[in-house]
Amino acid sequence: MTDSASVKIRYVDASALIKLVIDEPDGLLIRDFFNRNTNFCVTSLCLAEALGRIKGLWKKGKKGGKRLTTDEYFLATRGLIIDAWGGRLAVDDLGLLDPKVHGDVEQMARRYHLDLSDALQLLTIKRGRYSVFVGDSASVLITADGPLATAATAEGIRAWNCIVGPAPSWA
Image (tube, rainbow, N blue to C red; front, side, top):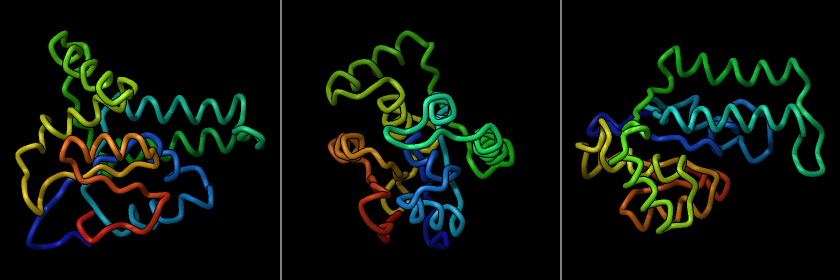
């Protein structure tokens, strides 16, 4: 449950978003956490990246694994869209098409060897709508991407790698 003394926004990376709608054993922790908590956020690019990865699981499958059926594909994409449309996932975006924002995102991406979506996610946490929350209310990143979690920590952002262990108390 959300701590009554503080409200925090939980930014969910594409790698973790997929685990909310694709039934994989390493997604149990994030699915349980998502179902018990509120105040989740994504960037529009992160949501698009998750939808693209789900498309890849439908068209090509996971390495050495089976492909999603058409019904599984549409169920997964519908889950993300309904969560975003229904308010479970707020969208916070700095606007990657703004040349200044793009330049700052590119610098961060180069610094940590990230793609633009991951760097935009970090920059949005630092400068976006909820960046005014500090202390116990400071936003956190939920990801299943180790290098992204490491980059977030280097930027002073609390990050939970949801496939490594249970949610920390501050998440």
